[in-house]
Each structure stands twice: as structure tokens, then as C-alpha cells.
Image (cartoon, rainbow, N blue to C red; front, side):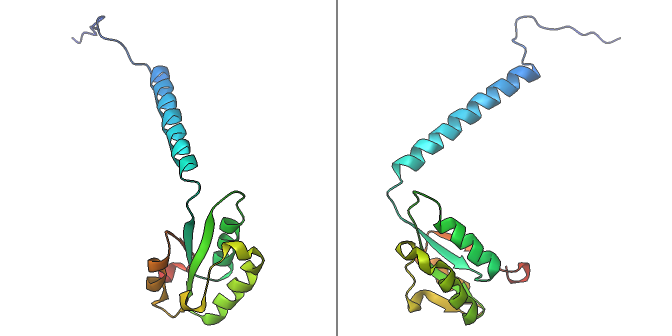
Length: 131
């Protein structure tokens, strides 16, 4: 015979209360992240792009076009030099957010390694076989 004896002294945590607690905790954590991001907003984020095809160029263009962001592309890499030229043409209208001298335009199968030394964040847009 089983008995369902409940201890009336211990507080009961219902599913509804658990969801409320999780929601409040998530809101607090999200607001803390926003405060941190606002205090760091003057720092330039150096972005690198690995994979200068259509997908990579589109992702880079979107990253650079965010209003109020301090993002600057500082290095690019692709297996083919012609793809890098196409990416440079696509972002040439955003000159204030592009810092890509020839020595930070890398091509070849090992070019991705060189990008890592020149950026804080990397957009990886290579085909799955190259990752």
C-alpha cells in the first residue's frame, strides 16, 4: 500500500512558479548583458571574413551596415583571389568601416589561419567541406 503523505511545512514549487522564476532570472541576465554592451560601445570590433563567396560577402555587408555599430573589417581570406576582389567591390561604399590593405587579403587553402591574427571576430562562410 502506498501512501501519499505531503509535508505541509515545505514550500511547493509548481510548474507555474518555476516558469515565473526562470523568466525573471532570464530578464535580469539579459539586462545585465545590455548594460555591459552599452559601456563597451566605443571599442571598435575588428571583423575578419573567411569565405568571400556570395554568402560571406552578404554576411559581411550586413554586419557592416548595422547602425551605430563600431565594426570594421580588417582581414579577409578565400581560396580564390577573384572572390576577394568581388567582396572588396561590394563593400567599397562603406569605406569608413573597411580597413583592408593588400597585406591583410589572404588567398589559398591555408589563408584562414592568417586572418585570425588580425581580428576579434570571424565570419566563417566557407562550404562545409572546408571547415
